[in-house]
Image 1 (cartoon, helix red, strand yellow):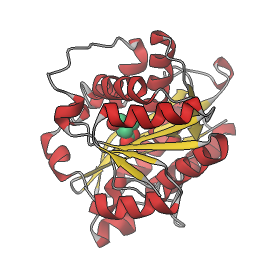
Image 2 (tube, rainbow, N blue to C red):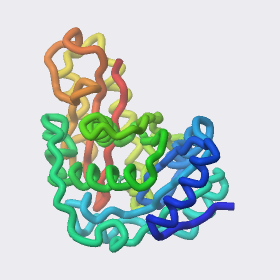
Image 3 (spheres, rainbow, N blue to C red):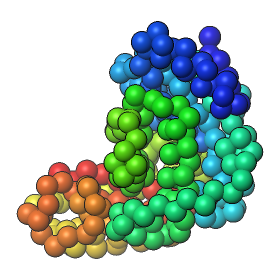
Image 4 (tube, rainbow, N blue to C red):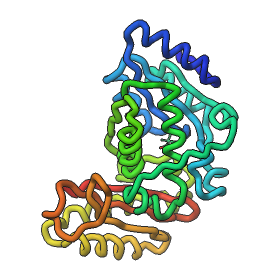
Length: 281
Ligand code: PAF
């Protein structure tokens, strides 16, 4: 039976009791509106750790757009049912007051990792993510924490933060889960209209096709190819396409310059902002 906590000290007591029994702690932080992608993170956590802790907190300070925060889906009752179904042990649902009794003034310096892509288009976003995830790590003190590769830059930022702050947690990356038509699972997908939902899978199709052209296109040409294909869909309001290395997420000139690369995209479809990325090699 899943136990639900609103208060930090009660959650910590429950976690400490399990730690004393020698149990390892797996943690999946979320903002709720759970989907199959989240459940995959939880299944992975269940495989690798004894006790599964999940948090649901729509973190206001990581939203640079007030309308996005207001419209962010909130589905706590169905989230709880899904969590029971994957065997979540402890669910943490703090209030804003519990997490931020006073405004947080922490400023992270993630260097060039945070200046590109989401960092450039969503000012303050990664600082807000860094603040909340570091607080949650301090509260839960998990052995392992699980994040999806759909938010690849977030994953890189969290790895960098864990290293910077010497937090004793293993960050586990889990592959993006897709709908049968290729659309990356996201809590925001449920805000797409029927027409928009039909168009959205083209994002993945373009990225996949572009990545397959690695032997015939330079990194810059691949970026241009994908931009052109996506711009051809009138409903897509493209923010960026980036072909970047998979560590620092910087663009580069030649495939030989780096060990691994991905192609990234962000676009607005109606009033829903979607991101995705695909491994090139
Ligand atoms: O990926 C998310 O859902 C959020 O950014 C996270 C990691 C839960 C922090 O609020």
